[in-house]
Length: 593
Image 1 (cartoon, rainbow, N blue to C red):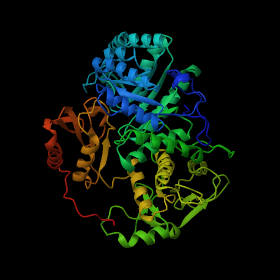
Image 2 (image 1 turned 30 degrees about the vertical axis):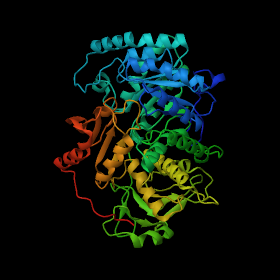
Image 3 (image 1 turned 60 degrees about the vertical axis):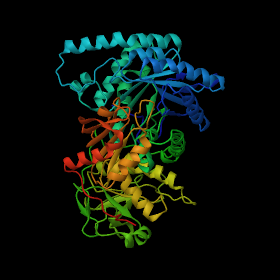
Image 4 (image 1 turned 60 degrees about the horizontal axis):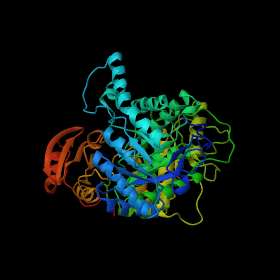
């Protein structure tokens, strides 16, 4: 199976066009040769018409092309009419998407008013109670027939009214039926979406897009690759557009890094027709990141140089780190390759800046100096020879290839030679005349290094696009954490807020971070409601989930432990729960200046 035309050349996947609204009056066309569409979501209560209108106008003002609004009940869905009426009075014709979970009746109501409906196959007319049971083939077919009966009316209504649809599965939010047959896997996500797509096609309805979201960028990349490959297997008329996003990415640098790894990697391979960067911040800030990220893709994807293509060194559908021997990097006995964690290398200039400020027990510190390494630098477009497998190898600066292509080609050439040398990844092979803005350096490094790590390539990394010494070191570690390669600090999964949210996510996330950000290796999910909470927390150790207005439920993994805790007490009760499970340590003063 192929997930893209070539992993070495940029070829945008040609999808069919999906029309959302009236393109002559502010609507958009997703797919085809149209530019990638940027979208976001409101954070206010859907029943608050004035706030919904105001937030929509604010999003449109910064360039948002599609606005999503949650519709958890029929009452909320009915109020979409009032919101849209007020928007049209203000000459705002941006397409509105109703976000539906659990309630087919809400979807039917919303479709009367909005240009697009998003449904989640994991909970639309299906069950998600984490029940374990075996389904016989006959029982499975019977369940599919029941779902078809529930879903078909929405399909017919959308077709009749000219509405678009997103069939969006989320990792951890699959139905019990899918979970019991396929597990919480990329295949399960793809099969869940395809079941609903078959129903749509049976009714000759094609105005829909797919999404496969996860809070883990590596899982997200695997899911989308598998989806596109499966669509190609089904036939050329299954070329539906793709919506990209890393769900519950969080805030600040971490949220941007996770999103850049997942979204950027796929865009560089030519996949993706519309994107959303999900941040636990004010929604308009998501659009700035979307725009900045899209601007980097032509720079980071190989579009010009012609190469002799080789079989890739990695399985694009199942993550496996490339096998290499273990070697000594020469600084304090630190090794890389083999079973070692991915190491962080810095330039001599960065070392000179940061080394005097680092304490012996610091978690964030250089592990090798680039200029001191015994390293072979090669041009992967030409033949080269390597004396032994224990030689650290990288790509020469100045090679006129995008870094992702260059390092994929290097790994492929080594495999063809029967070699498995450890590889040092670089975020850039050429340098800008003027230093990059930090926000751009962050996105570029995350896309390049994160994409390659998701391919299983890389035993050490070097970030040079960020000109600040301390910032480049911290960025390297943050990329490794976001890519699931290292854990040097607390990991947070935080949803971006919406009208279902039962507390102020930004404020609460800040409070939780203040109390827990020193807990190295602990993963905490902060979820606004039970719709996304229990499932999409995925592999978090602890969960803080809105259960009712002013009330919080606390989880260990996916298991609810404490219920209806007053919000004012919930952060400290979370700390108590972490202590009960032996994951708490007392905070120390900062280790890096």
